[in-house]
Amino acid sequence: AGFALQAVGLQSYLLRATKSSRLGMGSAVFFMGCTLGGALGNLLFGPVADAWGYRAMGSMMVVGMGGVTVASLVLLPEIPLPSLSGQARTLRSSFVGYGDLLSRTQVRWLLGVRFLAAFTWGTATFAFPYLLFVHTQVKRQPAFYAAARLAVAACAQILTGRLCDRFSV
Image (tube, rainbow, N blue to C red; front, side):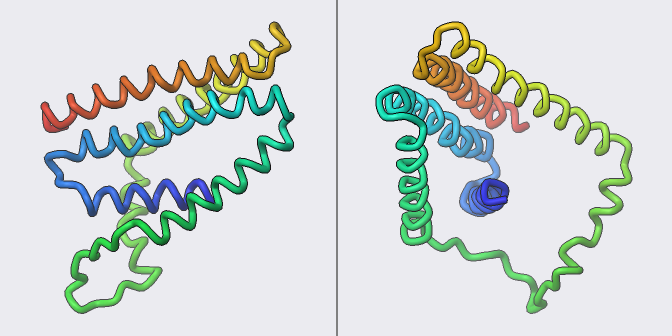
């Protein structure tokens, strides 16, 4: 739940902070932060896991995430919300119209395709590093594989962002 709140909250922040003509690159940089962060985390914590074990790695991660949370709360500037024309939104009114959206066949297909792609990618994300570890018995080997994969993904994100801005997608 924490990751979901972070992702949705940060995307909302991004949408308010970025001009629509630059949203492609803004999104690319936003998602690249997660991608490159994962790559660097793998490069850093693969050797930590080899040297001191997973318990030490997990403890360092908890402390690091606590620091990131505090820094986000303190350092991110406030971006004013658009005016609601003097009306306060209720929780119920926030969901008006989504039933119509979800009843559309195209939207349900899009959700299904998105789920299937995420499901299969999630399986591969687990299986490939695991198989590397089983084959090599070196804890840092899957981490280096993941770092390389994420570095390539970050490059693709920047290219995609530029193309989206260029062609107004």
